[in-house]
Length: 114
Length: 114
Image 1: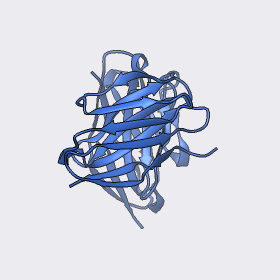
Image 2 (image 1 turned 30 degrees about the vertical axis):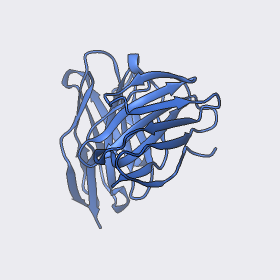
Image 3 (image 1 turned 90 degrees about the horizontal axis):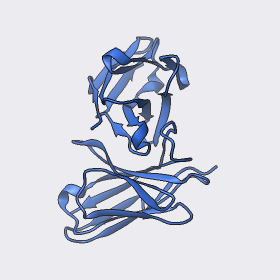
Image 4 (image 1 turned 180 degrees about the vertical axis):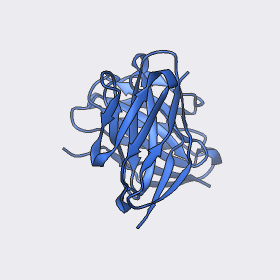
């Protein structure tokens, strides 16, 4: 069975600080990896995704994530956060054999202080 | 394109009752997945429908059921409601059955069971 672990439940940063949110998954086969974000009062929306190829993927709003297969990790990074990045971030994985079934981590709440 | 819509947005029921939630996917999307979101359990996969067939199912009791219509709209039903069913129920749609597709989420239906 798939599982996803997000290391930090709540992260508090000041504007311009760098961000790294950890995500580890457990699954023996080929997976597709996603980061979703939920801004206050808004729907979950996709930040970025990884399927194959370059393990460093870039998403919207300056976010990027690196897939490290040997570590089963897909950490999210941003060099300089803004107050508007305050949101809840979810890492998700689905297996090619179970396309419509995504397993989500518990989420990380990011608070950026102005 | 209009996004994923869910109705109703809020619902209050009492234990033992049943409830039906509705989801209209983005036009042209044929895959619809349902998730339960609670503070303690995070996002838990319920089931996924594609072309009116249930393709994947999560670990929920048989009180949780769903269906999909020929126009891809989907409904989920919860019978004999329990207090623990109080949650935000999210619907997500994807264009096809491929695992590379991101999921587009609706605003959710907030169900409160008293």
